[in-house]
Image (tube, rainbow, N blue to C red):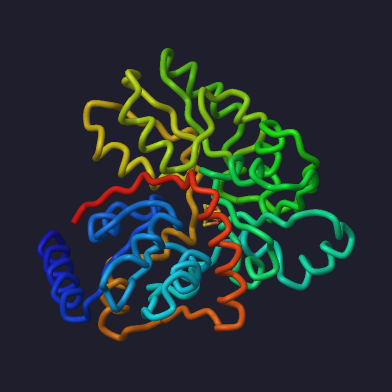
Length: 314
Ligand code: SF4
């Protein structure tokens, strides 16, 4: 088995060079996929890396909207998603058509879409945000009324930090809502003195029990700087692999072992190999949509404060 893994990794490396490819992995990917990656980070960080590399092929180990975002930013590159069925249920909770209907109800609201959304939805939005820069993005807007899509929990969290009217789309991440307040209470009782960090996609009662609500990049930075030796982590469990690898002297406890995103776990080393062999499945955003979606992403980038926590492992 070990020999097979080594052979697989060697073949992936050989093909990566041959194809002039780069492998990007989201923080929630399986450990064995993270180990194959040139860069690990969140979707936007990885797309930004992708847009700056000379690689002709991007193997995006994440979910569909992330590969789309890479395609939006890098139209001249071939973006591969090793399992084309790796979708995001939260991103699928809104369509461009349903957003257009909602915009008619609130014509004076500025539409802010979380990066966890399809290219079609981004194209219908005024500006994008990530969990790292959402507060800064919305504060920067010259408007008092925001239609925020699709994550109601991130939207609610932002609304506690700013003084604007927020209309929230009722979407949610099915993985993060599996983390319950009682999980945090129980983990704290089991690990007295531990710090608790949670993702703002969690429910408000979970966030209320945490020391910090952070993006995944923010969690990586926090882990490096905190004096705490034990950290309870309220997000998808895949990040524990990276946190533990980068901070071997600290202990990371998943707030709930149920917080597993089955879509993130669809990517395997074998599928990465096949993607490089076949140069498929490719994700490409139609030009008409790409140009409009790019506008929303670019506006966000103009605001700055994008989380820059990227782990280079190459
Ligand atoms: S963890 Fe949640 S938001 Fe992220 S890809 Fe999975 S379902 Fe979507």
